[in-house]
Length: 408
Ligand code: ATP
Ligand code: MG
Image (cartoon, rainbow, N blue to C red; front, side, top):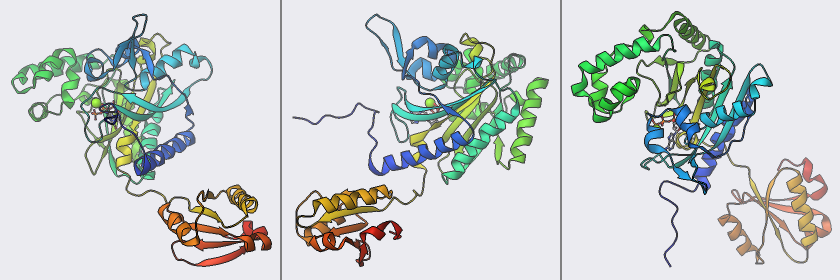
């Protein structure tokens, strides 16, 4: 029978790839906790409207990237393509705003997008995201970017932080108009998708990846020149804070992000090595209100964990592996030694095979054991263990009661 294959774009994570993935996600989560973000576990399925309303009808995600299906009652559900929409839904539904003056949450888990699979792009991938609700001050923006920068520094990934402000309800309409007028003049150079976007969502034309579009928008008006007083002051403060924090950043006037809900600050961390975005986020001061909650300023970012894992150069060394190998009628003592080693926090295997010493050591080598712990009748009687360093071949006898004091 032919072997089963996983669904296109859905992949298994094992071995080295998984170790990178876990190292990345553990590092990120430990930093999130230091910044006092609390975990929230969200469903992977929401009503389709949750995403339509928040992400926006004319975004790539909603128009063509979602896995949408009907349940048995004919309701339209979607596999989550990102985590902000669900977090906002949960924030409102659980009345989290009533519990504290502000709430900082993080989530992790699989996201689903119907995209063409390629290197670093899957149909099921994982994100870790942070969302802060109830804080309007630019100190938050600076801290969120600081957190992103710290994550990357800790993982040894070099990146550039790109920032922009895309304004608010007050100042964006005038900019949108100016941009539309500009785009009308260069329409001959735009791709078909951008011709369509030009009227529906002109800001999205600014980050089109098509060369002719990139060229066409090079001298487009900039949002930063249209910011209202409040947005301009916010953006200015953010920049001065980033300088105080010594975070290298670059202003990218074409950065708008693909989701409709952003206001004021948007930012991305772009890998210096590959030039791809690895972490992206921004403010979304109206989204909670638009989803039916009280007016609540908010800001968040999401990390694509697989993409980030690919960039990690060096993993911390693994814990050494011990293998307890019994010879003869010594299982009681072998179990005692295994327990003792595990109580000491050592990673221990017991040999499940019966064989002579040579075969046992060959097996240990194949299993990448660092220390073989040999236990025979003598060791049992004398209450010792014979420990063999599999890398150097050096062997020594240690008395069992003293084991805990030995620097193994
Ligand atoms: P891109 O421009 O690469 O499509 P995006 O703007 O769609 O990215 P976001 O929605 O902001 O990305 O998601 C944040 C991060 O999630 C991205 O920076 C990336 O690291 C990761 N990501 C997004 N889509 C995928 C995917 N299909 N497979 C793997 N990772 C992804
Ligand atoms: Mg995308």
